[in-house]
Length: 332
Ligand SMILES: *[C@@H]1O[C@H](CO)[C@@H](O)[C@H](O)[C@H]1NC(C)=O
Image 1 (cartoon, rainbow, N blue to C red):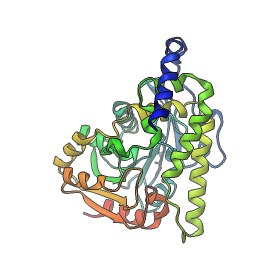
Image 2: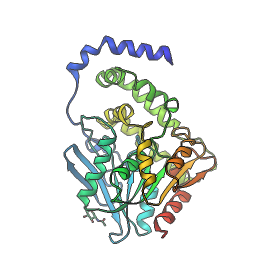
Image 3: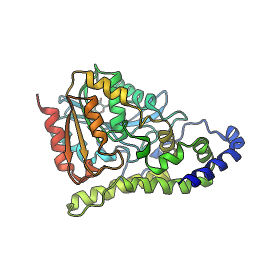
């Protein structure tokens, strides 16, 4: 690992002069250029392309317009397809559901910018302002959990209830996936961003990372297996066909505070609001032991632990998890 990193570093320094001249500063297009039949623009009902200062993003608003509002924030690789089961379930149960693709995933473009906390948190703020929601429940998974927590810390008046599924932000440096460690080495990020021949290698590494988020499990029913297969295909399709995915993924790895959101969790913990956390005890992507610190920072949060489940608990155990979330959102 160490010698490997040194090699990358060396290559990065040698070619650093190329970087200044080859930096792309344009917004990259979304999947709208190459839609995927498993994840078409109308994957959910009532989709809208929204133009914002950073670029064009897509959201879907459906369910019961008079029902209680809930917005769902997805993670680093899948796009909003990860909410295939939960979003539709909540809509069927009478909630007014808002799902969207974060910058550089699915049908949202990839602006040439820093993929940091401010970018993602302000995207959610701008979206809610556009749809005119001044109070809503918020659900986030993984990276989306980090975004949801940050959003709640800055916009406490907007968030009613908060649900965090294996949320990022409290990770330890040593627990970061290998690809994250390599990319955050000085120069490496700029180097791989600007050298097209490195892309296939990196896409391969992203694919491997994405596989590590899934726990191999037996005994899943057909519907669940099919959903896992579908979401996996959608993610893989994006790696190759979303013009801006690569920039957004790499940029997020380098700039998002996966290990540094303590202050936000603490702030949310001091606010008076019901918080539910859901975690698989075999999660190694956002390690399960992060839940301990999350509980220390948010003493009033309720934690539901699923035994023998990994980072993908939202999909592998969707019936149970959907029900837990529904019950939490509707309870007084
Ligand atoms: C469909 O989307 C439009 C635009 O966001 C919104 O005004 C309308 O309320 C949505 N319909 C439902 C059922 O959510």
